[in-house]
Length: 518
Image 1 (cartoon, rainbow, N blue to C red):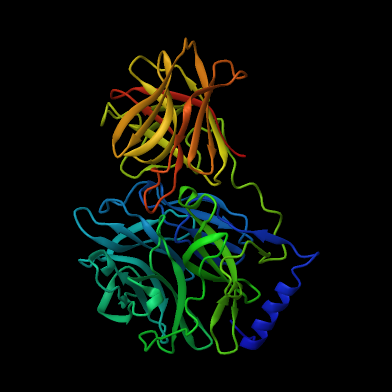
Image 2: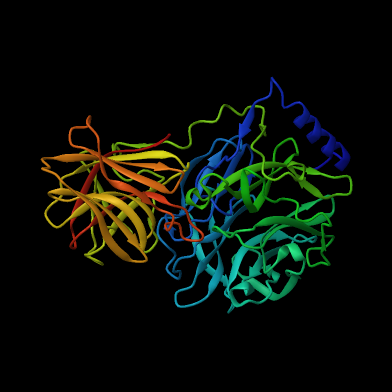
């Protein structure tokens, strides 16, 4: 319900910013530190629920909860195991609620097929979710699905055809959904395609809302990811969902600045007092792709002629007034401590979607067992956590493994690109695995009795130094510093991983895991 007129909303937002004052709490970006691309958000009462891309990681699509838009906790995931029809590329989940059910429209690659938009539903935001499979799988790929009701209350799916994968244009399509939101009806209608100079070779990531008699589409353009990214966000509007659509003459309304790069692909949520906030992703300049596309929050102001603006066009904010008066000081979202006291892996641990770990908690230690898929790899078995700042120390205690087994601490990009320090039965070895070729760069002979403490000191997100202690007090360096510039895949960030290599069924045992910012 929007009883306040546009001009009053603008005035109220300006006043809030002007009074970001001594007596009003503030917050700092990112609100979701770490690798949370393509964030999507919905409010139900006083609860905010969000999810984000997980790409090649499982569990798939975290379910995040907040009461204030600033402090977030993870309560689970949409899928603990991949949908049976899918094979990776778990992108752009869009969460919504129709009053009785929650919908997550998401992207995944079909086995031996193209990228598809699919849907899962649940009675509660935290799940459990039931997958209903693909809705649309165009030859060039279909991604970034979102739902909206038209001016007559009929539900539509809006998505991008991934034409840029074939050096073709990228239409944004709309097609009628069935009453239950899990099947398409009728024929698709094109709404937009890339044509403006700033949009370059693609537009994508549509998010739609209805406001004051207009439909607004927030969308992103250009290169999303990695060192050569140039992402930015624009908006278009229409009186009817199927058009005609007009672009904002001020596009793009959100670009990078000195602290944040390549912002885009977000969704909008309204607070109880009628203000709108955009939750989107951006790379922090320091740490860049190694830390990943982080979740950033900014208020939306609406101009007198009905167009949205974000942070006065100055790019992502560093600090801003808190969205809600009840927002407490932000808790530490960066440090990770796990002494493996729970009977199973805690929420927050991840693994490659096609490499589920054989993991168990035994006597307050994590036990990882290899599959034997590649006996020469140091990363046959893996569980990992996000690295959320560019400078940190990660540490773990590793029990002496059996002969022929490597148990270690790793900076992990993917199965082909990682580096780490692994304990064997008689030494600590520092290794690099680049483009699937693994080599040992340092070996420290050790008379291991029971365990060794190993830590990884990371500087500037890409410089790695390994240290060890046999008594928990005296620390020594293992080998030279290692350059990890080769690690991040184009759309992902580096993880801190516990890894085991060796013959099938080989075990690595770990305890006292820590990630601490420096």
